[in-house]
Image (cartoon, rainbow, N blue to C red; front, side):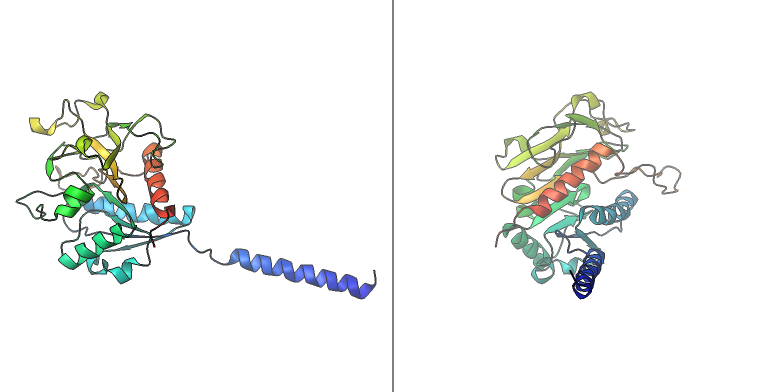
Length: 281
């Protein structure tokens, strides 16, 4: 092989190596895009969770290859804005305007993905958040109205109810959650054929709550905390209420929703399942 050919080969592989290095340094296209809507204006426990969730989910996106955006502007809940995202999150509330609600319903019926946390399912008439959206609360979530809650925020032992579902696959049969305020609902989700209950409170959690009011302590019953609706790509999780120092009026955060390996894995599994599932054309 003459010298010119050798030089040409060296030059070719040198250029190839440079191109590969450049390609590896370029940002990769995300596997899917996620946008979280939030309000973060009222209960300090919900505000604390929203800020914690935004930090944690942003880091999660960098680790698992999805783009994470968040917005407090609910007017973005429209078809044009949503078309750029495969998954929508409601971190603490729900849309109130009729046009926003209609856009979200259309998005979900066309195969969009959704994950909601804690207060996103709240509805109580009369209250600031009345049950005035039948499709969302009765058909989509299936839970109906808020019934009651435990107090103070405490950990609970959670039990996997549908072990074959991708959201809970690989989790321990039971695990201890982060502290949370737990909700009871007006509808019995077990009677809804469209609902798959993924996790519920295990009986070893009772008594659950510390009061001081007796009705804020649960001693028995069946309480779903994570579920999905077979008609949609969605997961609802009752988690999302950090413990706060209300008594001493410091509003200091006393607990964290994230950082428990099993609970983190539940959220990660759910988000990846929603983001990587094929959307309807």
